[in-house]
Amino acid sequence: MVKYQASAIDRTFSALADPTRRHVLLRLRDEPGLSVSELARPLALKLPGMMKHLDVLSDAGLITRSKTGRTVSVALSVGPMEEAMAWLKRYESLWTVSLDRLVAFVEEDDA
Image 1 (cartoon, rainbow, N blue to C red):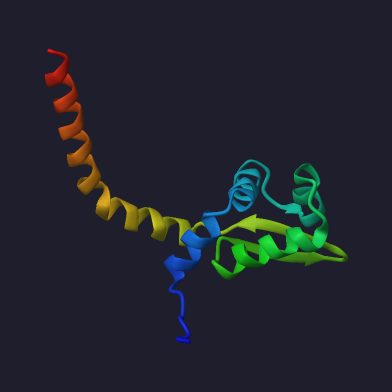
Image 2 (image 1 turned 60 degrees about the vertical axis):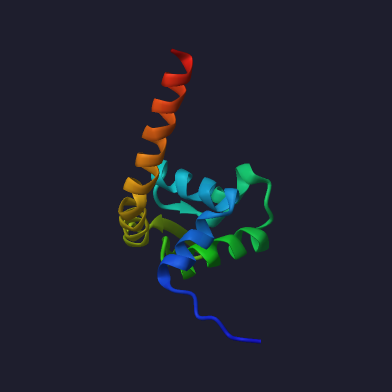
């Protein structure tokens, strides 16, 4: 089996593919510095499950963790998301042209 080293952008998109991880990122956007327990509570996840999600987000560079005493706080890290947005921007023109053609076709068909 070939060992594959995922690039940073691959890890970002892989982390974003999971709805639980996207929910965590949205919560951190609105409530920066939440503890791991606070993040897990509304999702009805046990701490080991939440830690696995946070490990994926951390490996992708989307979050940072800091420990104060026994409390681990989590914060967003915007760098990987900016890189993903730049990647998507490069391809935006491809789907914009296709959507424009679709709109023209539908409007022509309606007339």
